[in-house]
Image (cartoon, rainbow, N blue to C red; front, side, top):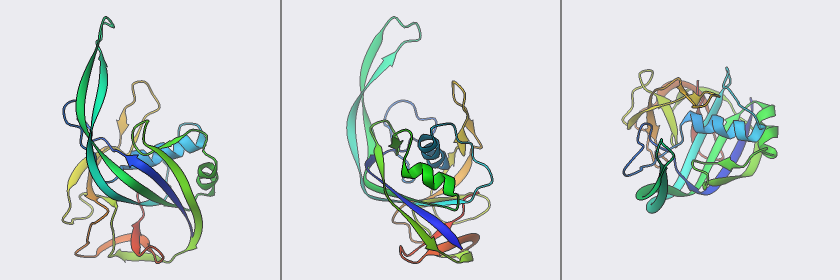
Length: 212
């Protein structure tokens, strides 16, 4: 089976925890699917709504740190703006590998219409490499890391977080398809195999879960 592997890298990345809007701002250890679909929208240049398309991804980071950030808060009356300093986590020296069979997405990522971001507006990312690889389907995955798995369908020892599948193309945006996921960070060591559809990237040495 032929699969395209897109490597996207950034100096910094941050993936906001849903519903945390004030105080300390932590980052998720891996991107939600909404971030991946957001990359597709930026590359295509228009709103991208996920359909029945198999994609897989692995996110790797060298570390995590905390920075101070000044934010400006505007009152609803528009009569005043106040500043505040927050502690915000960020990931540094990051790479996201996306796997897809959709050649249109590959062509868009080769020459993105808008800048690619791995989080906030300052987390600029670059497509480093696009490869075409041959893989074999697997129904038992043993080496998962740097990705997410839907809770309820699988049960593994890992943190759980409710994440949106994608966002609407409206103002204000609405999160759609929110459900709990296991978060498998870049150093995750899988203890037991799971029965799931995917394949192994032999060059990288990890399994890929086909996201639904």
